[in-house]
Image (cartoon, rainbow, N blue to C red; front, side, top):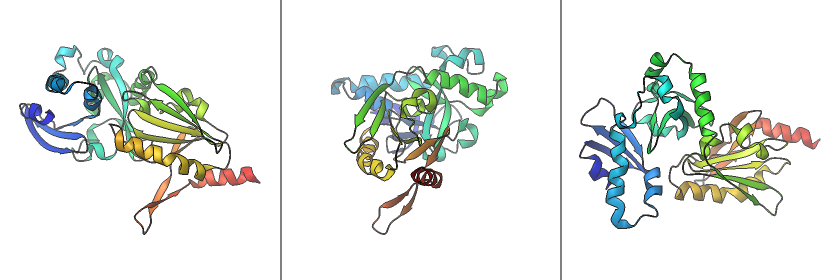
Length: 278
């Protein structure tokens, strides 16, 4: 249905892993549409309503004029600035990296500045800053303030082995919400920081690290992380990150002969736990 609708406006060049690459008949830029929001929208809809919902969803992608925003005027768009955490692969095939405004908070991802329209996200292009006369740092600050206002459902699971896993669920904002970890997930910061996962846009997890039990935490939480990555729309990754001193550090991996991977605890965390054990 999505492909049929889009082909009325341009050429669908690729459909893979819940992402549609699209070249419009009018306009110079290729576009990439993630289907995670649409999947959530259709999940509880009667099948007979799907054509109408798909049409309504994609129609909003073709005109910003109706929304009343002039992207070149900062005062008009500052209240719809937001941040979206995309996996590195998301923009690679479109060769857009040089046009985007992003930071790297979680390795293998880009924390990208976006316009958060009512029914779509649109990346902020670097060229807009020539008109806005504000710094990228200031724009990200405004955007993070907006992310902090999103509605997030907080959960907590207590494991018999002695640790708690906090969950952050939302329609599509959970990973970005954890970027301001000190504000939004302070209860997850243990004596040695926190173990963090962002499998999808709408799901994120954090475990306080208070004792030397990191391998046990990974062993008991990995199935959940993989399940959300496989089943929830809007995939990001199954990485483990260590949050400490306001930074996220990735657990690196190395391949094993059986096709699986070894997960390596960051050296600084290993040393911290060793020192604490003396």
